[in-house]
Length: 415
Image (tube, rainbow, N blue to C red):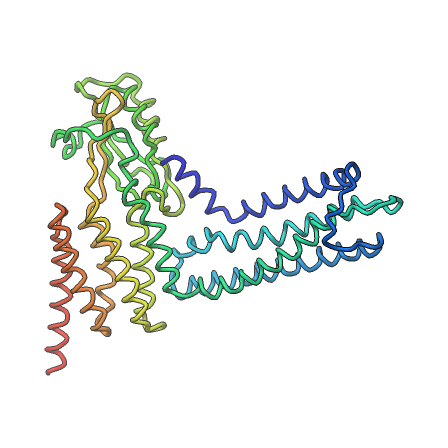
Protein backbone atom coordinates (compact mmCIF):
# COMPACT_ATOMS: atom_id res chain seq x y z
CA UNK A 1 0.00 0.00 0.00
CA UNK A 2 2.90 2.35 0.70
CA UNK A 3 4.11 1.66 -2.84
CA UNK A 4 0.69 2.50 -4.24
CA UNK A 5 0.63 5.82 -2.41
CA UNK A 6 4.10 6.65 -3.73
CA UNK A 7 3.06 5.79 -7.30
CA UNK A 8 -0.09 7.91 -6.95
CA UNK A 9 1.96 10.85 -5.66
CA UNK A 10 4.37 10.61 -8.61
CA UNK A 11 1.53 10.32 -11.14
CA UNK A 12 -0.05 13.53 -9.84
CA UNK A 13 3.15 15.45 -10.62
CA UNK A 14 2.79 16.41 -14.27
CA UNK A 15 6.42 17.49 -14.59
CA UNK A 16 8.09 14.20 -13.60
CA UNK A 17 8.19 12.52 -17.08
CA UNK A 18 9.38 15.78 -18.66
CA UNK A 19 12.14 16.12 -16.06
CA UNK A 20 13.26 12.53 -16.71
CA UNK A 21 13.27 13.15 -20.49
CA UNK A 22 15.31 16.35 -20.13
CA UNK A 23 17.89 14.69 -17.87
CA UNK A 24 18.17 11.72 -20.26
CA UNK A 25 18.56 14.09 -23.23
CA UNK A 26 21.33 16.00 -21.46
CA UNK A 27 23.16 12.77 -20.75
CA UNK A 28 22.76 11.29 -24.24
CA UNK A 29 23.61 14.57 -25.95
CA UNK A 30 26.93 14.59 -24.08
CA UNK A 31 27.68 10.86 -24.27
CA UNK A 32 26.79 9.79 -27.82
CA UNK A 33 29.24 12.15 -29.60
CA UNK A 34 32.04 10.58 -27.54
CA UNK A 35 30.83 7.11 -28.55
CA UNK A 36 30.87 8.29 -32.18
CA UNK A 37 34.44 9.55 -31.84
CA UNK A 38 35.58 6.25 -30.34
CA UNK A 39 33.70 3.72 -32.46
CA UNK A 40 32.96 5.60 -35.73
CA UNK A 41 29.53 3.92 -36.01
CA UNK A 42 27.27 4.67 -38.97
CA UNK A 43 23.79 3.05 -38.84
CA UNK A 44 23.28 3.99 -42.48
CA UNK A 45 19.66 5.06 -42.06
CA UNK A 46 20.22 8.65 -43.16
CA UNK A 47 22.88 10.38 -45.28
CA UNK A 48 24.61 13.33 -43.61
CA UNK A 49 26.80 15.24 -46.06
CA UNK A 50 28.23 18.34 -44.37
CA UNK A 51 28.53 19.99 -41.00
CA UNK A 52 26.42 22.97 -42.16
CA UNK A 53 23.58 20.72 -43.29
CA UNK A 54 23.72 18.83 -40.01
CA UNK A 55 23.66 22.06 -38.02
CA UNK A 56 20.62 23.26 -39.98
CA UNK A 57 18.82 19.96 -39.41
CA UNK A 58 19.42 20.10 -35.64
CA UNK A 59 18.18 23.69 -35.54
CA UNK A 60 14.99 22.64 -37.34
CA UNK A 61 14.42 19.76 -34.88
CA UNK A 62 14.95 22.06 -31.90
CA UNK A 63 12.70 24.80 -33.29
CA UNK A 64 9.86 22.49 -34.31
CA UNK A 65 9.78 20.43 -31.11
CA UNK A 66 9.76 23.41 -28.74
CA UNK A 67 7.08 25.13 -30.87
CA UNK A 68 4.88 22.03 -30.88
CA UNK A 69 5.47 21.62 -27.13
CA UNK A 70 3.99 25.09 -26.65
CA UNK A 71 0.97 24.11 -28.75
CA UNK A 72 0.52 20.88 -26.80
CA UNK A 73 0.70 22.76 -23.51
CA UNK A 74 -1.89 25.28 -24.74
CA UNK A 75 -4.21 22.47 -25.84
CA UNK A 76 -3.84 20.82 -22.43
CA UNK A 77 -4.74 24.06 -20.63
CA UNK A 78 -7.83 24.50 -22.81
CA UNK A 79 -8.83 20.89 -22.14
CA UNK A 80 -8.50 21.48 -18.39
CA UNK A 81 -10.68 24.58 -18.62
CA UNK A 82 -13.39 22.73 -20.54
CA UNK A 83 -13.26 19.81 -18.12
CA UNK A 84 -13.61 22.15 -15.14
CA UNK A 85 -16.61 23.92 -16.63
CA UNK A 86 -18.48 20.86 -17.85
CA UNK A 87 -17.43 18.08 -15.45
CA UNK A 88 -16.34 19.85 -12.27
CA UNK A 89 -13.00 20.84 -10.72
CA UNK A 90 -12.44 17.49 -9.00
CA UNK A 91 -12.00 15.70 -12.34
CA UNK A 92 -8.84 17.74 -13.01
CA UNK A 93 -6.91 14.98 -11.29
CA UNK A 94 -7.93 12.62 -14.10
CA UNK A 95 -6.26 14.87 -16.68
CA UNK A 96 -3.35 15.67 -14.39
CA UNK A 97 -2.43 11.98 -14.05
CA UNK A 98 -3.06 11.15 -17.71
CA UNK A 99 0.01 9.28 -18.96
CA UNK A 100 -0.44 10.28 -22.62
CA UNK A 101 -0.48 14.00 -21.76
CA UNK A 102 2.61 13.62 -19.61
CA UNK A 103 4.45 11.44 -22.15
CA UNK A 104 3.69 13.83 -25.03
CA UNK A 105 5.25 16.82 -23.29
CA UNK A 106 8.27 14.67 -22.38
CA UNK A 107 8.56 13.39 -25.97
CA UNK A 108 8.70 16.98 -27.25
CA UNK A 109 11.03 18.49 -24.67
CA UNK A 110 13.50 15.58 -24.80
CA UNK A 111 14.36 15.96 -28.52
CA UNK A 112 14.61 19.74 -28.11
CA UNK A 113 17.17 19.45 -25.33
CA UNK A 114 19.05 16.68 -27.14
CA UNK A 115 19.30 18.71 -30.36
CA UNK A 116 20.52 21.80 -28.49
CA UNK A 117 23.15 19.83 -26.58
CA UNK A 118 24.27 18.06 -29.75
CA UNK A 119 24.68 21.42 -31.50
CA UNK A 120 27.18 22.43 -28.85
CA UNK A 121 29.10 19.17 -29.38
CA UNK A 122 29.60 19.55 -33.15
CA UNK A 123 33.21 20.01 -34.21
CA UNK A 124 33.56 21.85 -37.54
CA UNK A 125 37.16 20.68 -37.88
CA UNK A 126 36.45 16.97 -37.43
CA UNK A 127 37.14 14.60 -40.32
CA UNK A 128 33.91 12.64 -39.84
CA UNK A 129 30.39 13.46 -38.73
CA UNK A 130 28.82 11.89 -35.59
CA UNK A 131 26.49 9.64 -37.58
CA UNK A 132 25.10 7.70 -34.61
CA UNK A 133 24.26 10.87 -32.66
CA UNK A 134 22.65 12.51 -35.69
CA UNK A 135 20.61 9.42 -36.55
CA UNK A 136 19.31 9.33 -32.99
CA UNK A 137 18.34 13.03 -33.25
CA UNK A 138 16.33 12.41 -36.42
CA UNK A 139 14.58 9.41 -34.86
CA UNK A 140 13.70 11.46 -31.78
CA UNK A 141 12.24 14.19 -33.99
CA UNK A 142 10.09 11.69 -35.88
CA UNK A 143 8.94 10.12 -32.60
CA UNK A 144 7.97 13.57 -31.32
CA UNK A 145 5.75 14.13 -34.37
CA UNK A 146 4.11 10.73 -33.86
CA UNK A 147 3.47 11.50 -30.19
CA UNK A 148 1.85 14.82 -31.08
CA UNK A 149 -0.52 13.17 -33.57
CA UNK A 150 -1.48 10.59 -30.95
CA UNK A 151 -1.89 13.39 -28.40
CA UNK A 152 -4.42 15.25 -30.56
CA UNK A 153 -6.50 12.10 -30.98
CA UNK A 154 -6.23 11.38 -27.26
CA UNK A 155 -7.40 14.86 -26.25
CA UNK A 156 -10.47 14.52 -28.48
CA UNK A 157 -11.33 11.21 -26.82
CA UNK A 158 -10.45 12.17 -23.26
CA UNK A 159 -12.76 15.21 -23.26
CA UNK A 160 -15.78 12.94 -23.72
CA UNK A 161 -17.72 12.54 -20.48
CA UNK A 162 -17.98 8.76 -20.93
CA UNK A 163 -14.17 8.48 -21.07
CA UNK A 164 -13.74 10.51 -17.88
CA UNK A 165 -16.42 8.48 -16.09
CA UNK A 166 -14.82 5.19 -17.10
CA UNK A 167 -11.37 6.34 -15.98
CA UNK A 168 -12.65 7.47 -12.58
CA UNK A 169 -14.31 4.13 -11.89
CA UNK A 170 -11.25 2.18 -13.08
CA UNK A 171 -8.87 4.16 -10.90
CA UNK A 172 -11.18 3.95 -7.91
CA UNK A 173 -11.66 0.18 -8.17
CA UNK A 174 -8.23 -0.43 -6.63
CA UNK A 175 -9.31 1.06 -3.31
CA UNK A 176 -12.11 -1.48 -2.86
CA UNK A 177 -9.93 -4.51 -2.14
CA UNK A 178 -6.84 -2.86 -0.67
CA UNK A 179 -8.01 0.41 0.83
CA UNK A 180 -8.35 1.59 4.40
CA UNK A 181 -7.99 -0.06 6.89
CA UNK A 182 -6.80 -3.31 5.27
CA UNK A 183 -3.27 -1.96 4.95
CA UNK A 184 -2.96 -1.49 8.72
CA UNK A 185 -1.77 -4.54 10.69
CA UNK A 186 -3.95 -7.65 10.76
CA UNK A 187 -7.65 -8.13 11.63
CA UNK A 188 -8.38 -8.50 15.34
CA UNK A 189 -11.37 -9.43 17.46
CA UNK A 190 -14.12 -6.86 17.76
CA UNK A 191 -13.12 -4.12 20.22
CA UNK A 192 -15.16 -3.41 23.37
CA UNK A 193 -18.09 -1.12 22.64
CA UNK A 194 -17.05 1.41 25.27
CA UNK A 195 -13.69 1.81 23.51
CA UNK A 196 -15.48 3.00 20.37
CA UNK A 197 -18.44 4.87 21.82
CA UNK A 198 -16.92 6.66 24.78
CA UNK A 199 -14.75 9.75 24.51
CA UNK A 200 -12.21 8.38 26.97
CA UNK A 201 -8.52 8.68 26.20
CA UNK A 202 -6.17 11.38 25.07
CA UNK A 203 -7.56 13.49 22.23
CA UNK A 204 -5.39 13.76 19.13
CA UNK A 205 -6.36 16.95 17.31
CA UNK A 206 -5.34 18.33 13.93
CA UNK A 207 -2.71 21.04 13.99
CA UNK A 208 -3.79 22.37 10.59
CA UNK A 209 -6.66 22.15 8.11
CA UNK A 210 -6.95 19.79 5.15
CA UNK A 211 -8.47 16.57 3.86
CA UNK A 212 -7.65 13.45 5.84
CA UNK A 213 -6.06 11.48 2.99
CA UNK A 214 -4.00 8.78 4.67
CA UNK A 215 -3.41 6.92 7.91
CA UNK A 216 0.13 5.53 7.92
CA UNK A 217 -0.32 1.97 9.18
CA UNK A 218 3.23 1.37 10.35
CA UNK A 219 3.44 4.74 12.11
CA UNK A 220 0.12 4.41 13.93
CA UNK A 221 0.87 0.86 15.12
CA UNK A 222 4.33 1.90 16.32
CA UNK A 223 2.89 4.88 18.20
CA UNK A 224 0.26 2.67 19.85
CA UNK A 225 2.84 0.05 20.84
CA UNK A 226 5.16 2.60 22.44
CA UNK A 227 2.26 4.04 24.41
CA UNK A 228 0.84 0.59 25.28
CA UNK A 229 -2.48 1.94 24.07
CA UNK A 230 -5.12 1.69 21.35
CA UNK A 231 -5.61 4.42 18.75
CA UNK A 232 -9.29 4.96 17.93
CA UNK A 233 -9.89 6.85 14.68
CA UNK A 234 -12.61 9.51 15.00
CA UNK A 235 -12.52 11.19 11.57
CA UNK A 236 -13.14 9.30 8.33
CA UNK A 237 -10.78 9.36 5.38
CA UNK A 238 -11.81 11.99 2.85
CA UNK A 239 -13.37 14.31 5.45
CA UNK A 240 -12.21 17.91 5.57
CA UNK A 241 -10.58 18.62 8.90
CA UNK A 242 -10.31 22.06 10.50
CA UNK A 243 -7.58 23.06 12.89
CA UNK A 244 -8.21 21.55 16.32
CA UNK A 245 -10.70 18.94 15.10
CA UNK A 246 -10.52 15.52 16.75
CA UNK A 247 -8.66 13.01 14.57
CA UNK A 248 -8.35 10.13 17.04
CA UNK A 249 -8.17 9.24 20.70
CA UNK A 250 -5.33 7.38 22.40
CA UNK A 251 -6.75 4.96 24.97
CA UNK A 252 -4.30 3.19 27.37
CA UNK A 253 -4.96 -0.55 27.56
CA UNK A 254 -4.77 -0.72 31.35
CA UNK A 255 -6.46 2.60 32.02
CA UNK A 256 -3.33 4.16 33.51
CA UNK A 257 -2.07 7.65 32.84
CA UNK A 258 0.57 7.84 30.10
CA UNK A 259 4.00 9.26 30.72
CA UNK A 260 4.98 12.12 28.42
CA UNK A 261 1.50 12.37 26.92
CA UNK A 262 2.43 15.11 24.46
CA UNK A 263 5.08 12.92 22.80
CA UNK A 264 2.63 10.04 22.29
CA UNK A 265 -0.06 12.39 20.96
CA UNK A 266 2.40 13.94 18.49
CA UNK A 267 3.43 10.47 17.28
CA UNK A 268 -0.19 9.53 16.58
CA UNK A 269 -0.90 12.86 14.90
CA UNK A 270 2.06 12.36 12.58
CA UNK A 271 0.45 9.14 11.30
CA UNK A 272 -2.60 11.08 10.03
CA UNK A 273 -1.75 12.89 6.78
CA UNK A 274 -3.72 15.98 5.77
CA UNK A 275 -3.59 17.10 2.13
CA UNK A 276 -4.98 20.08 0.27
CA UNK A 277 -7.08 17.75 -1.89
CA UNK A 278 -8.52 14.27 -1.70
CA UNK A 279 -6.64 11.31 -3.20
CA UNK A 280 -7.55 7.86 -4.47
CA UNK A 281 -4.95 5.89 -2.52
CA UNK A 282 -7.26 4.90 0.37
CA UNK A 283 -10.32 7.15 0.00
CA UNK A 284 -13.23 5.04 -1.28
CA UNK A 285 -15.58 8.02 -1.29
CA UNK A 286 -13.50 10.21 -3.61
CA UNK A 287 -14.45 8.56 -6.94
CA UNK A 288 -18.11 8.73 -5.86
CA UNK A 289 -17.70 12.43 -5.11
CA UNK A 290 -16.23 12.96 -8.58
CA UNK A 291 -19.08 11.07 -10.28
CA UNK A 292 -21.70 12.95 -8.27
CA UNK A 293 -20.10 16.24 -9.33
CA UNK A 294 -20.32 15.23 -12.99
CA UNK A 295 -24.00 14.37 -12.57
CA UNK A 296 -24.71 17.66 -10.79
CA UNK A 297 -23.05 19.66 -13.56
CA UNK A 298 -24.92 17.72 -16.23
CA UNK A 299 -28.28 18.36 -14.51
CA UNK A 300 -27.66 22.10 -14.17
CA UNK A 301 -29.70 24.42 -16.42
CA UNK A 302 -26.47 25.63 -18.03
CA UNK A 303 -25.62 22.18 -19.45
CA UNK A 304 -28.96 20.31 -19.31
CA UNK A 305 -27.39 16.95 -20.22
CA UNK A 306 -29.43 14.23 -18.46
CA UNK A 307 -27.74 11.45 -20.46
CA UNK A 308 -24.36 12.27 -18.94
CA UNK A 309 -25.95 12.50 -15.50
CA UNK A 310 -27.55 9.09 -15.97
CA UNK A 311 -24.22 7.60 -17.08
CA UNK A 312 -22.38 9.11 -14.11
CA UNK A 313 -24.95 7.86 -11.63
CA UNK A 314 -24.97 4.44 -13.26
CA UNK A 315 -21.18 4.24 -12.86
CA UNK A 316 -21.44 5.43 -9.25
CA UNK A 317 -24.03 2.81 -8.32
CA UNK A 318 -21.96 0.16 -10.11
CA UNK A 319 -19.05 1.23 -7.90
CA UNK A 320 -21.34 0.80 -4.88
CA UNK A 321 -22.30 -2.67 -6.18
CA UNK A 322 -18.62 -3.61 -6.17
CA UNK A 323 -18.24 -2.20 -2.67
CA UNK A 324 -21.22 -4.27 -1.51
CA UNK A 325 -19.70 -7.43 -2.98
CA UNK A 326 -16.47 -6.94 -1.02
CA UNK A 327 -16.49 -8.27 2.56
CA UNK A 328 -16.47 -5.43 5.06
CA UNK A 329 -12.97 -5.08 6.58
CA UNK A 330 -12.55 -5.45 10.31
CA UNK A 331 -12.29 -2.10 12.04
CA UNK A 332 -10.10 -3.66 14.74
CA UNK A 333 -6.45 -3.97 13.73
CA UNK A 334 -3.70 -5.79 15.60
CA UNK A 335 0.09 -5.52 15.54
CA UNK A 336 2.51 -8.35 14.74
CA UNK A 337 2.07 -9.72 18.27
CA UNK A 338 -1.72 -9.96 17.87
CA UNK A 339 -2.45 -7.12 20.33
CA UNK A 340 -5.25 -4.68 19.49
CA UNK A 341 -3.64 -1.37 18.51
CA UNK A 342 -5.98 0.48 16.16
CA UNK A 343 -9.73 0.88 15.70
CA UNK A 344 -10.51 2.33 12.30
CA UNK A 345 -13.44 4.35 11.08
CA UNK A 346 -14.46 1.96 8.31
CA UNK A 347 -16.24 3.16 5.15
CA UNK A 348 -19.95 2.41 5.46
CA UNK A 349 -22.28 1.67 2.53
CA UNK A 350 -24.99 3.94 3.92
CA UNK A 351 -22.56 6.86 4.09
CA UNK A 352 -21.36 6.22 0.54
CA UNK A 353 -24.92 6.04 -0.80
CA UNK A 354 -25.74 9.31 0.94
CA UNK A 355 -22.62 10.94 -0.52
CA UNK A 356 -23.51 9.74 -4.01
CA UNK A 357 -27.21 10.50 -4.19
CA UNK A 358 -28.16 13.23 -1.71
CA UNK A 359 -27.23 16.29 -3.74
CA UNK A 360 -28.21 14.75 -7.06
CA UNK A 361 -31.71 13.96 -5.77
CA UNK A 362 -32.45 17.67 -5.35
CA UNK A 363 -31.69 18.35 -9.02
CA UNK A 364 -33.61 15.65 -10.88
CA UNK A 365 -37.11 17.15 -10.68
CA UNK A 366 -36.94 18.19 -14.34
CA UNK A 367 -35.49 14.83 -15.42
CA UNK A 368 -37.85 12.01 -14.37
CA UNK A 369 -35.95 9.46 -16.50
CA UNK A 370 -32.85 9.97 -14.37
CA UNK A 371 -34.89 9.60 -11.18
CA UNK A 372 -36.56 6.42 -12.42
CA UNK A 373 -33.22 4.94 -13.37
CA UNK A 374 -31.80 5.71 -9.93
CA UNK A 375 -34.79 4.15 -8.15
CA UNK A 376 -34.25 0.93 -10.10
CA UNK A 377 -30.49 0.91 -9.42
CA UNK A 378 -30.95 1.63 -5.72
CA UNK A 379 -33.40 -1.25 -5.47
CA UNK A 380 -30.85 -3.64 -6.97
CA UNK A 381 -28.16 -2.20 -4.69
CA UNK A 382 -30.27 -2.78 -1.59
CA UNK A 383 -30.86 -6.42 -2.59
CA UNK A 384 -27.14 -6.98 -3.21
CA UNK A 385 -26.14 -5.27 0.03
CA UNK A 386 -28.61 -7.37 2.01
CA UNK A 387 -27.22 -10.56 0.49
CA UNK A 388 -23.64 -9.62 1.47
CA UNK A 389 -24.34 -8.35 4.98
CA UNK A 390 -24.08 -4.61 4.30
CA UNK A 391 -26.61 -2.05 5.60
CA UNK A 392 -29.48 -1.23 3.24
CA UNK A 393 -31.33 1.53 5.10
CA UNK A 394 -29.91 4.45 3.13
CA UNK A 395 -30.43 2.87 -0.30
CA UNK A 396 -34.06 2.14 0.58
CA UNK A 397 -34.56 5.64 2.03
CA UNK A 398 -33.15 7.33 -1.06
CA UNK A 399 -35.34 5.23 -3.37
CA UNK A 400 -38.42 6.14 -1.34
CA UNK A 401 -37.52 9.84 -1.47
CA UNK A 402 -37.18 9.67 -5.25
CA UNK A 403 -40.55 7.95 -5.57
CA UNK A 404 -42.22 10.41 -3.19
CA UNK A 405 -40.81 13.33 -5.16
CA UNK A 406 -42.15 11.84 -8.38
CA UNK A 407 -45.61 11.37 -6.85
CA UNK A 408 -45.63 14.99 -5.66
CA UNK A 409 -44.72 16.17 -9.15
CA UNK A 410 -47.52 14.11 -10.67
CA UNK A 411 -50.06 15.56 -8.25
CA UNK A 412 -48.84 19.06 -9.05
CA UNK A 413 -49.29 18.38 -12.78
CA UNK A 414 -52.83 17.10 -12.20
CA UNK A 415 -53.85 20.28 -10.43
